[in-house]
Length: 358
Length: 114
Image (cartoon, rainbow over all chains, first blue to last red; front, side, top):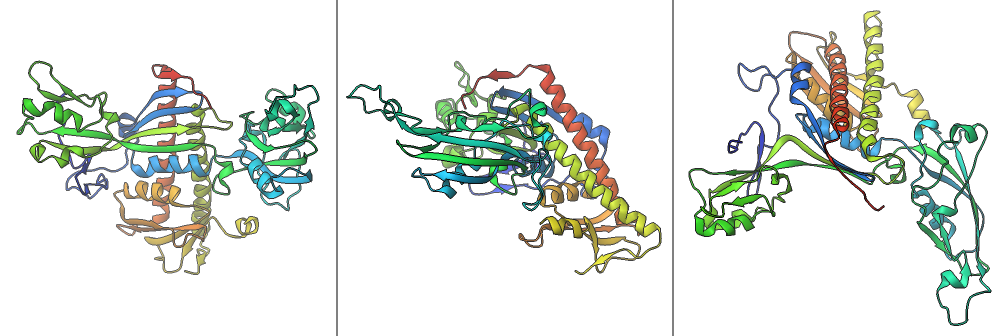
């Protein structure tokens, strides 16, 4: 691959104290005699999505050829608008543990549940009747007792007592109405059975009824479908052919970057950029601190190359998250479009267009 | 919130719009930067759009304002509708590309403790 050059149209310049060329310029009318208007076929050619790493809990993928506003929309939807199920109401019949009711209720709300949200409807407000279509019911009934069979010298509470901890695995689902059939294939449980919710000692008990509903992350973080969803731009190191690195300081130059980013030829001590490891560059800008490397290289980022990292802790397998966010985005578009078509129809029928008070 | 959702229309045209809608501000209810910025970008991709900008007037008000001004006295409402369907096509393309990449199975797989 030919050595990269800094292109103000494609790259964001990264300097010691500032960044340059941050905004995209690919709009019609920005450059004389250039089109840049929306072209779906051209977009299909330019757009590229590449999955790099996938685990049971996280996914790394590259989204290339889209504007920041689009990549950011997907990221924002992942965090705030992909629906999940979480405990919303806690009815405390008895709680003699040291954790007070409201703190325990809050902890319960944050437990990720392994429930497919598509099986439930939104319960739009607390006043709406809870039904088997919008609410899941769990029971949490744990009583701590003394374990009579432990030897005398044991001090471990787990051996001294039964139920010394209330765990997320103690949540017991109580099917309502049709739910037994609908959730037969995938019984609702917390996705992690080992979350400690409270600690108990003999005589203490927790007895609660929990109602889980469907919600989105913008209402409460407990509904957030992702653990994290973030992107960064692909780093770029542009070497200046006019001013090559002297062989004597090649290794010093190499150490200014993240490991693997800069290659040094073992014989000629010639410096080159490893395209594959370039994405690991931390952009520490260490190279700018050394006077001897002045004008030797330019740090940059590729403006339309987004490196996504999405982690999941709840119901969604990581590879399903981006499709879910695209689904939410498309339904938002459909809602706005329907409303805009309604406006157009009311205008065509010669009625006055509804004007809001500014 | 439920009552507001029922009574407030999804889109309103704010006072001061041109009669032919060649310049208008659309107030879109229950939307944020997520749709505002994406929509603004797609509208700016339209060569017939002279100006497009959006704002979230106040963080505690659940709506955005999208300002569209057109060349040649064209309708901004048509431009808005076109941008919306273009944005939908874009989403479809991204989804397709993602599914294609996921299906190739050339990526690294690993196990993670949660």
